[in-house]
Image (tube, rainbow, N blue to C red; front, side):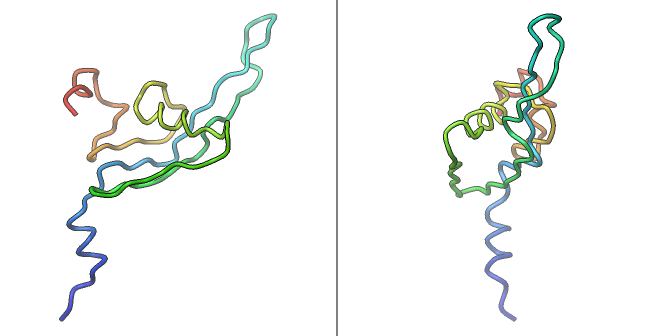
Length: 102
């Protein structure tokens, strides 16, 4: 019996980065009381998986949230929602020391 090449590729190339429903909103503050009156939805529900040996490009119009998505994945900005898993570990649950090791 011949094995499915897609299954073989998945076994040989484990998932190294998985982004699930990533959300990043920036608050809009009123000028008078400095309270939040709304949000700018910079990234809203982005999901993708990257396997070992794969390369991915994030393409879109100017101002669509590509850089914000990358900065949020790298934890340079806090997420509003969603999950970022690197090698099966939740990036946002790791301490600074644990992040340095990965």
